[in-house]
Amino acid sequence: MNSPVRAFRSVGGTPRFIASAQGAYLTDADGTRYLDYIGSWGPMILGHNLPAVREAVADALQFGTSFGAPGEREVLLAEQVTRLTGVDRVRFVSSGTEATMSALRLARGVTGRKFILKFRGNYHGHADGLLVEAGSGLMTNEGHLGAAAPSSAGVPEEYARLTLVSEYNDPQALDALLAERGHELAAVIFEPVVGNAGVLVPTPEFLAALHRVRDHGTLLIADEVMTGFRLSLNGATGLLGLQPDLICWGKIIGGGLPVGAYGGRADVMDFVSPQGPVYQAGTLSGNPLAMAAGLATLKALENDPGLYARLDAYTAQLASGLKAAAQAAGVPVSVNRVGSMLTAFHQDVPDGSVRTYTDAARSDTAAFARWFQGMLARGVYWAPSQFESIFVSGAHGDTELNATLDAAQAAYRGLGAGA
Image (cartoon, rainbow, N blue to C red; front, side):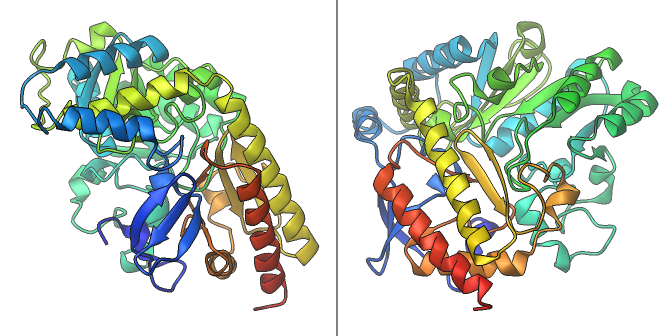
């Protein structure tokens, strides 16, 4: 496996090797077709193999795959991202990990401070300083680590000590930590809507506390690698009314090709080389194929003003249908949802009450694994971890919704019967 959650470690069984994808469906190497709710972990908001994206990449391909020099498409995509999100400047990289790593280096360069703060269960990529209580893939890895270790072997404790951790959705804990150590913090980085501890929705009180970090001279960094352009055209920050100093993106802005970006206020971004002293570089940054796919994707999103309402309506029906099917089978489930992101936590609490990493960790992972296998056997490819979001695309319609709920009802009945 080239990424751990694909390995099915937390759900058991044999991973499916995918040969092709179209619309809302995947086809594996054995020719079996699956209704897909992973969407390449978020980028495929318009469905797989969208003709407009495929044609844009093919057009770019005829002129070369990489230049190692500036090109028009990266300028056009930067203009589109800044216009839609309201940031002053944007810098392209090749992955979400590069985006968050670069944004944190920039924050340290701007403030002259070395400590950062993240939240339990928020995943910001696999840079050393961020693999501390870092969400889904690491939650399934913790049995292989010592109790006091970072979330991954190979991360020096000296790096981990520069990362402070607070509880997501606990404004009192954040205020207390800032009062004690805010003067040492270069940045607070967070997922506006968490997707890697399952979907966790921020409370208004927590959002207000996040904005108070600036009182300490600390930069606020929103990691929208997952939520950017998925929850709205200006992301979760626009949907929730957030005003971060820096934003990180990935996934959707590359239309499914490898990409990442970070951007923010001009006075902060001017610290990045060559204008400023903070170094960041990448041979494939602004790759013409990825830029072409991103341009086509964002154009398609802008040209379909009703898309986000349709995604929201579909996911709302999916959530209520899952809940009803679980209740009918006597299976305890609590559903969290924002827009086209959803997690069904296997635990007996009211919907929406799973708000923190600690809450999410109480889920019955063994029950989820059995339910996942029941869905897979019925042709529905759900995220293979209790602690992940699933993603709905514009290619999902009534046929897919009905098929999903039929499979879910059968899978829950099997779980309720102890199968």
